[in-house]
Image (cartoon, rainbow, N blue to C red; front, side, top):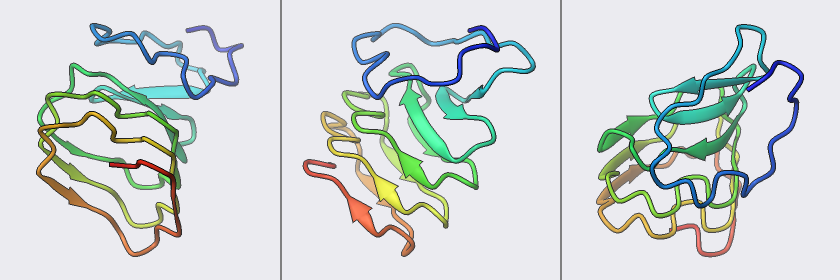
Length: 116
């Protein structure tokens, strides 16, 4: 993605089931780490590849998870969300049928409809 890209909508990659890598320029407004697309600096999770490892730990600094960000991730079994997270978008984890453990910090104030 080019450095000129400054905004990605909440459903931009919603049907990209096999996408496992996003190549970004050094000066990009986004970061792609362990299958998770974050804004840069890290405050939001924009999208999560369905090709992620089964256990994920979200980078510190994340304050918001976009709607449908993790949706239909069949690999995910364990998730640890960092302190400071305040908003989880609607359906963020819908269709994550194998998710058996999620650590949600006490800083979450807003959890959208159908989150899990």
